[in-house]
Length: 385
Picture 1 (cartoon, rainbow, N blue to C red):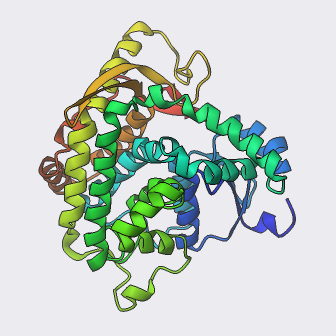
Picture 2: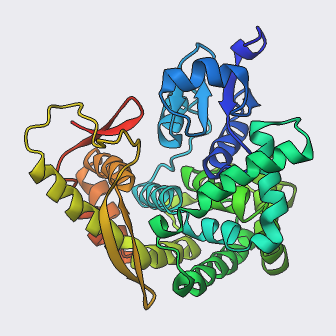
Picture 3: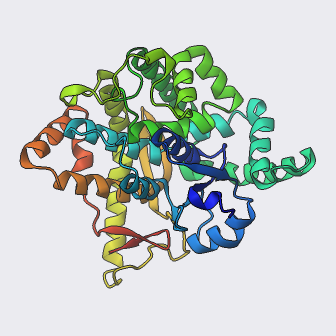
């Protein structure tokens, strides 16, 4: 790193990356000085990746040399150092809504995956070039296409892992159009999900809405045609200033009296209805795994294959009337554990408000889940405590 780079955060990521979009927007809105480098950067290969024991982007290298991987861990780390403006709303209802949306949008990329990889007639050249440039930023067209093709071939193999079959395509497209319609009305009245400040939920929403749905040709066209205010919000989430030109007189604060907009409640109800059963099955499968491994010491990595985010078995759900078979993810249980820990830290009256709101938006069953054994991260891999 140069002397100038050492005075700021270095973000290693890609413009085609779901999770880099979330982190880049966060760094800009928080006013944290940073530079961005692709995963092909020599320091990423020689220092960052070996130190993190992970190649999963984004990874940040802080100004003091600390290397942090996983967007949730990155946000927790940086939020402690740069608390203003806060990305967690102050009230229990808004906070719970933000935590839940962060969980949902961080842990479910199926809509974005579908619109990228199942519309390759429109997307192929752009997507292959974007991935290719991440690994050979100044390469020839032929070299860039070769690298991009390798990534595309690998990603196409995830369809069965995610349960994305032709039978489920119409449901994923229905969900995307619902997002656009709900958010289009929301952003007519409010600059962000909870008022005049961007929250963790806004940054999580940038994962699907920027890198895939707001840049890849086919879904971008859908967004611009159907929801121009959403497109404008995506643009502004990549700008450093908090106040957009359209909301120049809106106060830079979360909504008063812990208000959660009806549009946000509706998004939560739909998401809870669609995906709670998957998380329930993940919790049951993890419980079975814990029972089968009773003597593992604290700090044991869960995956025998050294996967950082291992599945816990096959799940079968019904998504809006369509059967869906997919790998049950474990990482959402780690994120859910964080929400449950936050809830336990509330005062009795705040906890009552949060629980009442959870029932109102359909998240009661979700908050009733408890991982059979506490989860942690060791070497940037899920492990048991």
